[in-house]
Length: 397
Ligand SMILES: *Cc1c(COP(=O)(O)O)cnc(C)c1O
Image 1: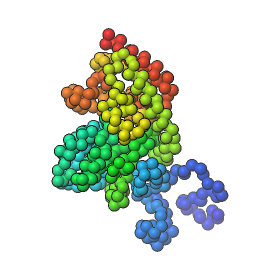
Image 2: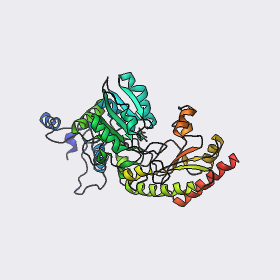
Image 3: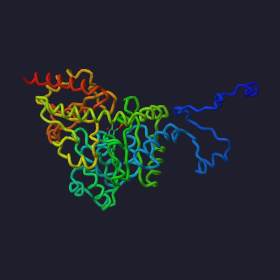
Image 4: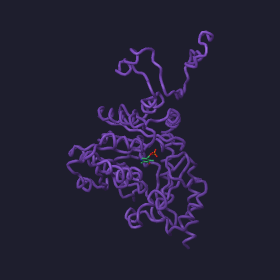
C-alpha cells in the first residue's frame, strides 16, 4: 500500500494480511461501520445483505453471544442487552402499553418487582403480584386488560418451583403472554420455550458469564414479530450492550456447561451436609425429598438441582453475624453464579425493605442464608460451613 498517496488520512488503517484466521472471536469495538456506496447501504437497510452500521443497532460481539444463547434456549432472533434489568425492561416496556395489566410472580428478582410496582403504574400499566406455585391464585388476578405474566422458574431465595406447565396452559387459554426469567435455572437446567413460554430472558451477568466481571442480559421471543419489537425497542431506548462485555461473556459461556454441572453437583452435596449440622433448622434444595415442590422440581428440572442452596440457622442476627464472619473465604456479596461461592442474607439485603412480618410470611428469618455454590473443592466448602455453623450456634449458646 502506498502510504504517501494516503497523506495524512487517519482511517481506515489496513489490517495486516493473514491467510489464516483467529480461533477466538475478534473484539470489535468499532462504533461505526463504513459502507462502499449509498446503494450498498440501501441493500443493508433493506435486508438484502447483512452488514453493521452503528453499534447501538448491533455489532458482531453481541450477535455471537445472542446466537449461542439462541441455540441453548432453542429459539431464533434473541438479543443481548446491557444488563439483565435491560432485558426485563425491554420485555415489560417494549411489549406493554398504557391501559394494559401485567401479573408478576410475588418472589421475582427485587429490581423486577420494583420496576413493576413503582414504575409501570406511573406509565399507566397496572401490576398485580401472585404466587406462581398456585395456578388458581394467578387465575384470580386475570383481568380483561391482562397482557403478560412474568415469572421465574425457581424463586429467590426460597427456591420454590413455579407450576410452569399449569401457568402456560392458563396463559394460552386466557391469551396472555408468558415471560420466564430463566437466570437461576439456566437453559441447562430448564428450557422454558419447551414448556410453553412466549418470552425467555436472562441476566447473563450471573451463571452464564459466570465470573462477576461483566453485566449483560438476553431476551428472546418465540414469535418473530415480538422478537422484532423487542429488538427495535432496545435499540431506540439504548439498552444495547458493549462489545467488550459481549466478548467477555462469550469467553465465560465456553465453560458454562462444565461450571454449572460442577456447581450443582457440589450444591447437592452441601445441601445434604448442611441438613446434618446441629443448629441448621431447615435446608432448601429442590432435589431434596423434603423440598415443598420436590415432585414438580423432578418433573420440570429432571436431575438438575441448580447451584443455589438456602438454609436457616437457629438464633437471630447475632448468630447470622457470627456465621458470616466465620465463613472465611466465601464472599458475603449480593450476586450469584460466580466461579467463587457467595453468601447472601436476605433480611439485611435483598429483602430488607420488607416488614419483619412480610419477611416472616416468606420464611425469611434473621437466620436465613442463601449460598450460590461455586467451583471450590466440595470438601473445603463442607469444612467451612461446618465451622461457620458451629461458630453461629456457639453465639446462641
Ligand atoms: C440479577 C438478576 C436480574 C438482573 O440482572 P442484572 O444483570 O443484574 O441487571 C434479573 N433477574 C434475576 C433472576 C437476577 O438474578
